[in-house]
Image: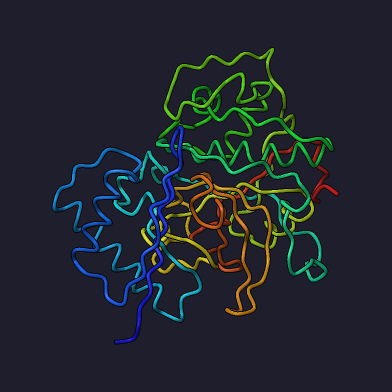
Length: 349
């Protein structure tokens, strides 16, 4: 049998320490090996308390074997590993890491306005120092708030020429419900940008700390540190060229897409989903596109995307995903915060 190597790195950031549960290399992984991994996962890594039932073990085992088979397939463009979500079903991830599916109504907004052939092959806003650190949403389906604050933090820095304070996701969880957002059960960045506009701004996370649970709105307008005076800039649904132009000429863009059960174990490379939808009815995770590039090995254009599952997931909290195919619906509800007055029928210079 061809030698098979499975590299498993468990890293879990806890309150006071970091657990690094070593590396395992296998020619063949045995039942005993999987049981040991399962005990470690249940005891130290799972994001919620899980009973070590046979059903749970069988779910975990099936995913470990899928990870092994995925990584031995030379046609795959990305790798997988065991993560804190490996022992959960996709349904269990709702309200913890992803949202319930959102109905992202198709927008007829901003479209590409110029030839994109002059754009560079690779571009990354992180290299210009405007993208804030990767955060962790914890056990709350509040990804939409982290996409929102990440976009505002970055675009504020670009427009104002000064670094933005880290902003209060909890304010959005608690206070943005009148704009068709649902706290830990989901929402959309475009709706959050409109909330910020009408509320008069966002507080910093220092004055409105994150709790990873729904709470009573205690917004204090005297403590706002940023605003989005012109609301949401909505990009025409499905128009990846407009998304590309917006990201390059304006700043990082909030996007939403459908997470399926081959995504939570991503560890690196260019993600290409095989079972996800591309419509407006299935998006269940909001993130932040911060750049783009080209993978010559696999002949794939890709987006560089900031996630909110902590720095131990993916490529130090980021992932790359195929660009140009509306992969998993990532272009159906893209938007960005309009911090300065938009020009008519054009992107901001």
